[in-house]
Image 1: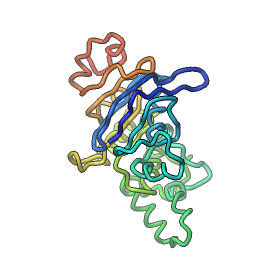
Image 2: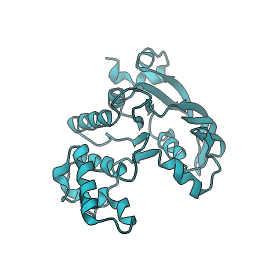
Image 3: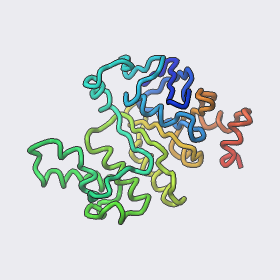
Length: 246
């Protein structure tokens, strides 16, 4: 369980989040919606303990992580994996080297075992044939798949976090990424691996999520399922989701 209790956060330019509260089970499939600059990615970074709130508390599995030292946060980070916007692959490394980057830190791991792990993960995301290619040789969609494989390399998380996973992709590639996200979160609660996707791409969100949060002015102004989302009477939210109301 993730719990945000009256969490506020500021960057230098001012308040980004203003007293937000919500809880999420690890098996849920959640989309956090809103225009750019509303703090969607900030929420992911707060979940991972990469940022600290100005006020409020954040609990993971009942433990308050708000003020935990870095060495203790690592245990909680293993519950999650994150795919950042644009994939963030290392340009100078091959796909295989990108995927198994974290394994290189484990001294003594045989090279054959490292390659086998890379192939297993790339097969899982459907691009094993790209193992020897460089990132610049991949399409945008394949880069995102490689980034997802890399995110799975260090651990088997209970929940996957996605930061704008379809941004910049053509419709076909975006559909493929949505199918992959669903494949990796298949099954029924409470056993399945949940997701939190932050995005302004409403069409992608409705393909993968079952619960939707909408941020405006640093606050959660909507929290509900797809039926409630489509039935909202909030003018600003209706304008934001107009593409799925047709």
